[in-house]
Amino acid sequence: MKNIFRILSAVILINGFLSCRSTKKLQTAINKKDTIVSVKNSTPDPLSAGNSLFNTLTTNRINFNTFSAKIKVQYEDAKGKQPDVVANVRMQKDSVIWISINATFLSVEAFRILITKNRVTILNKLEKRIEQHPFSFIEKIAKIPLDFKTLQDLIIGNPIFLGDKVVAYKLTENRILLSTLGKFFKNLLTLSVNNNLIERSKLDDLDVTLNRTADLSYGGYENKTGVFFSTQREITVAEKTKVDIKLDFKQYDFNTALSYPFAVPKNFKTK
Image 1 (tube, rainbow, N blue to C red):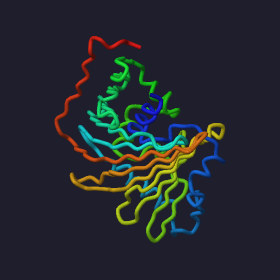
Image 2 (image 1 turned 90 degrees about the horizontal axis):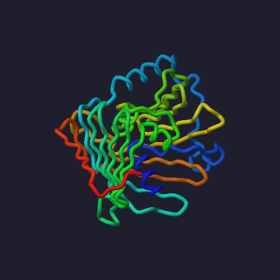
Image 3 (image 1 turned 60 degrees about the horizontal axis):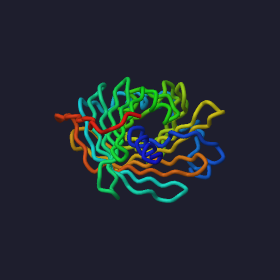
Image 4 (image 1 turned 180 degrees about the horizontal axis):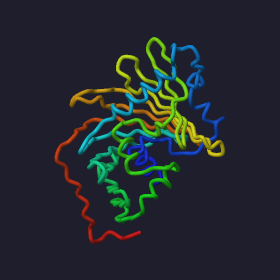
């Protein structure tokens, strides 16, 4: 059950940066070469170039009315690789997020989740139980400040916790490094030179007592509907142990008619 909720968090938070962990332990999980580098003299005016790229990232966010996807989720922790699950996700922008989690080893639907701006409702089909929580329940799982809009961006693949201030910029032959600062996190972004697509996002908590950090990778970009969409994503997190999560988007569609079925069987108990 606990792992299912971690996987759920990974699906809706792309996330694995849900955990608090020590800086020392994290450095064993994430390669040291990814720390922020000096950007002095990388361009004649790095701050101007960085701000221009920041504005591009902001204006190039994926916009949508509805979104649906079928995602294969792989999860591995200190106990080894856990059974894969398949998450079917449907979204109505600024309204509802619907998720069906299927346990592949059982070939059955294990959970169905309905998320609105105010409430999280979970059908636990394995235990025939329904749970209702305020939206803050997701924040409690994630251990980071979240709102409904951020959840949407995380699922779609838009940059999250981008901040509002550019603090560093560096242009190399194949990559662009952009470091931004926000209210909660410092974000080191790695982007491709050719099309400014995000390849990695490394988040470091500004609160040194928490030391929350995550490494998110984005790959397998496709452009089927006029927007670039990352179909392969990886998250590495470290708390007491290292956790790896892989998300493989097998199918996805934008702006199609969707339904969000959520009937509660009469024999289900309320937790």
